[in-house]
Image (cartoon, rainbow, N blue to C red):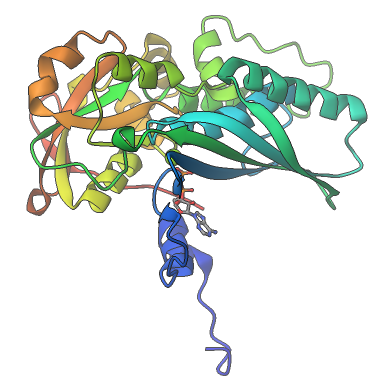
Length: 343
Ligand code: ADP
Ligand code: MG
């Protein structure tokens, strides 16, 4: 490849194909590595304990914009999104490490704010900060958080274990974080460059802003399911968007799915913001991402039990792989689901 100087652009692969390309030849060497790349977290076997490990990297101006992101919220979010990956395996987060690279534009006070958010999240989720690394960057802030968690062997929920003819369920509501981001971006465009610009008025949109700036991991949903003796057959957290994430589960489990547009839970503020921006709220729920809700499958006979869980909605069912993955609209039309993931 290098001899004739041809290089493949990253955009030719996209994020998921790139990860597959980089990791396809991994051969696990240790019996203690039960699951490596390919799920929300890796799973390690240390005697009676099964350990979960997951990591996420947040980069200034790629994942967050400090024009409208308070550092305290950023610290909280960096922890919450990692805890969410442990929830997606049906586990409990216990420890984190935090590594930062920071340019000399930042002050100690700024980093104190970041860490106030990190420590707040540690309190909220009952986890210990046990280490990390600190170094300088040429420009901007980089935050890498690794989380460790634990899970009972019988409770582990992978992405690849959903079966045909099962219920597809989701917690909370979808599309809110994306609408919050759109609102922040709009206000930034309006106010950037204006001298003495008044404070933007976010009244009536507090919920979608919070969903974007300070998301929560759905620890309560994991506990609720455990309390009802419900172990999902497969689970993922909605970080990339409903469409992309259900496709991950279907691909890994070698099944298809039908999702029903009118069953997808969408908050009133999300609808209102979508309308104001001339966007389709369903599209926002499908493609928005960063909701950190839990998306999971259950055997069909759990229908009545799950109906008693207020914050969980059945949004579709799984099918044979040959039927593909579709969204059925309110008027009965069927559209193939697509993942619009960008690097
Ligand atoms: P999530 O959205 O749940 O954080 P990702 O889509 O980022 O998951 O990653 C999918 C899988 O690929 C995970 O198992 C992750 O650990 C693995 N992965 C992602 N990037 C890399 C990489 N550069 N090298 C090795 N494994 C990776
Ligand atoms: Mg995940």
